Image (cartoon, rainbow, N blue to C red):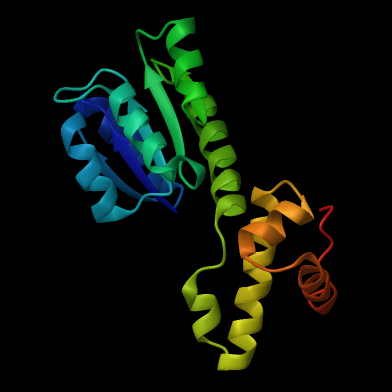
Length: 187
């Protein structure tokens, strides 16, 4: 798992980096808010630890950009702040922040947030392309189609009519595919 730590305080960045590297995470850092978008493209982090008060662009502005791109659905953003208010934390959570930690960050709270974020990221990722490239073409197509149907059903909250419409197929065709792949739409 890749973690990007965005904080303008070097001591905090380095301390969190050491802790997470000791736990086996691949860790990257950034200190300037306006550089975060480029850094995200560069390292493709699964988890972002984001301070609210940053030079160049505020953490809240960064969070709004991540939210606007839809990337908030597949990345866990943990907000950290020493000056956060209830209103700030509510706004961050409405924008899709995964968690909100107050500074000074306690080790156990950090690790709990990271562990929960890892579970979130794992559950939000669809199978990667490598999953399919190790299979013969016919089997890869079937595995992809199955993963695609499961993902669309999740997005449509199990609504078969909505899922069929999204996929551009009729509902009877969707039923055949559900039976073929032994997919229970209620899960």
